[in-house]
Image 1 (spheres, rainbow, N blue to C red):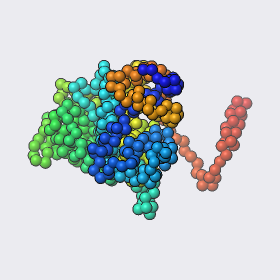
Image 2: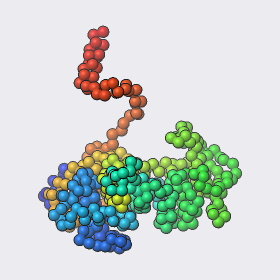
Image 3: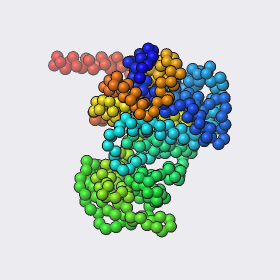
Image 4: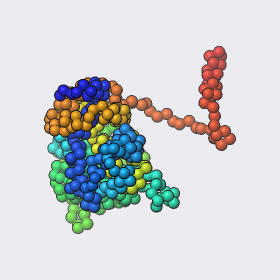
Amino acid sequence: MMFSEVMDRFVEQSPVSVMFRGTLENAVTPELLDEVFASTAKRQRVSELLFSSVVDLLGLVVTGTRRSVNDAYRAKKEQLAVSVTAVYAKLQGVETEVSRQMVRQTACRMAQVVDRLGANRQRLLPGYRVKIIDGNHLAATEHRLQELRTIGSGPLPGQALVVLEPDRMLMTDVFPCEDGHAQERSILPQVLPTIEAHDLWIADRNFCTTDFLFGIAARSAKFIIRQHRQTLRCELLGTRRKIGRCPTGIIYEQKVRLWDAKGKCKDVRRITVKLKKPTRDGDTEIHLLTNLPGREANARAVADLYLRRWTVENAFQELGQALHSEINTLGYPKAVLLCFCVAILAYNAISVVKSALAAVHGAKAERHSLSGYYLAGELAAAYHGMAIAVPAAEWTRRFSSLSARELSRVLKALAAKVRPDRFRKNVRGPKKPRPKRSSGKRHPHVSTARILAQRKSRKMHAVKA
């Protein structure tokens, strides 16, 4: 693809920023966002301030281009032609289902591109769509709302269940909940209708409920879920067989019979890993329940697949560190959850960039070795300049109409210009134990220069000695 002279400079100096913006222009068009709002919103109506404009504002904050919503509004004030009060009113009223559908539909478009980028990539379990589900409780906000100013406790704006597909490394669904104190299990009835045949759901013990396990099986899907001691009615069958060793301990397998509330039973496999070291909670064994047939996944494969659950934990960490997924100055739950979903959208776009880099550079740019933090930093540094130098119409003309196959080719051509070592993670050594500190009550402050001078003096005396 031929670019203009101005865009060519960004292609040469910051190709990952062009890849990110091009992905957004193709998969997250204003037309798609406004269509999602118009077809999903029940209470709010289409107004002068479009939903796509609100998402654009939050995108500037999430990627670090602007420091706050108000700062982003000031930069876009002439284009919006509405007051900042109208912006915040729109934010606090966006329904959670609108935020969810935004993630679902944009992720569907990006998934097609990722599939084109890595057509020969080996799936975790051939024949199944692996989905990892986990909950993320959003951090407490500032006490800006009038009702919160007299409360000393941290106000929780909500939580969300997120579905990550590790084969594509995309967050493909999210279930926002405005109640920050609600049990994760109370959201599971919303998840069940989305389960399809040939899905493989992986989750921690918080998701181990009778209704969820039987609901997955009833939809011809499979699960690998850590057993919870108190949420299931079950009976062990036969004797536990030793399978062998793994890096974390010894693997055993045994059959288990589960009962639901109506008295129906289902036999599943229980894979036990007797750990070399206890978990943070002091558990010495981990029990995994699965309805996968042994011919498709033996006990060792089940244990390995469950370890992939940490992939979503790493993704949450990247959302918090590389992207500003939680704006603590926003108090209204709907606004905070929308911001979190916009951060998921940005995470997915960066993930597409990572997939393109891995497809072109191979072992030099493996996904797990690339830092989302460094990539997001590059975007924050170059994005504003690109918005000024390259007209929005040019981005739209060059990227919005590309098919998934065409976009994947462009991304690969741009990825060839990237030096992967610029964005590689720093591998740190083992943590050293923290030394004991002296009390600071008598001397609350010290001079760093004097402390360093004392160290230098000690070294000189040691050399002379």
